[in-house]
Image 1 (cartoon, rainbow, N blue to C red):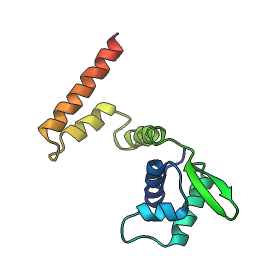
Image 2 (cartoon, rainbow, N blue to C red):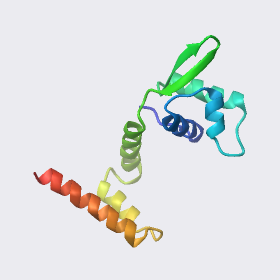
Image 3 (cartoon, helix red, strand yellow):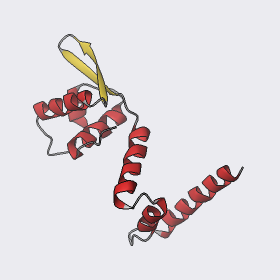
Image 4 (tube, one colour):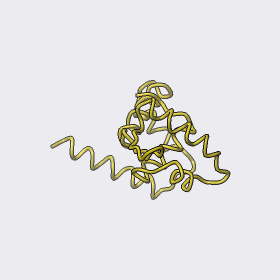
Length: 124
């Protein structure tokens, strides 16, 4: 699976949220300053060539929809990120995240609960 550029990821976030939509629908969800219609249309067609997006034709109009689920892309992206920046070590990644000074005690407790739940599932 190919990695998305920043602009492609922004469009995919909108399509994952909408489930399907026309270029105008995507434009409506983008924050200011909005790119030109032609820019969004070009990015969507690039995403289609990369296999991330499909379309249904209505005459000359196309309704686009994601072919790749957000969860699947996120998992692959995180795996690639961990490999390239943390020597493929999830403990190093987790250490980096929890040592971040912006993380709250509540967030640390939530992470701890998630880890404990996963440990319980794996020990059964």
